[in-house]
Length: 120
Length: 113
Image (cartoon, rainbow over all chains, first blue to last red; front, side):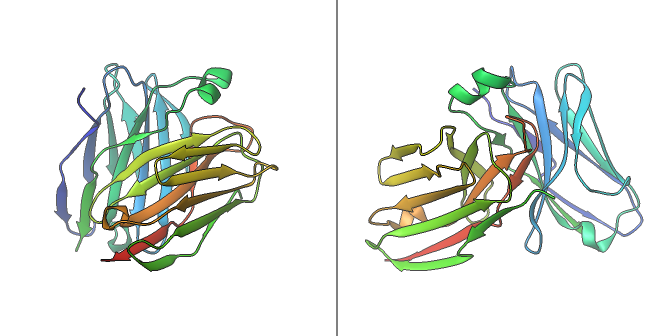
């Protein structure tokens, strides 16, 4: 089956602009999470969506936002870009299951190839 | 806040040598997951450990979850050049089994042929 698809793969933007990144999860996966990866901070959680609702949010400023559509596809938006926003943005999807089911099945998150954002 | 720490940050080994990375959480975890990221790639899920003291093997890789469910380790026996990459551990929010993951900073493994 197809993996997690992120578009675009690369982006170059200037400070002050805004950007929208897209993520199509694995078919059947309803949980979509976004992470920012930088050499300095590692992998940091941005937010998680499930059934079009934001279920968790990390410690990022309000310039970072996201949404999920009824087909589970997700987008994240960064407004008023800063140089420090340059990073690899990763989307991860998961077959959402709770409690005992989650614990007894050996599955984690499937990451997309990411969008490499460079802010100049 | 909740933290996951991982050591060492870098490890350089000659092919055939063993490798171990250690992960420690500031809170008790319901499960711990391990991921591998090849250079220029994205994290790929390796395994999930759930039970206290659990040990799982995948060929040359051995994963352990501590008795207190706060620490974990990944051991690779007889490394190969294909093992090159960064290995991350990750755990969910305290009291949760899914959702947000807290990642360690990873151990970057380099293998000399």
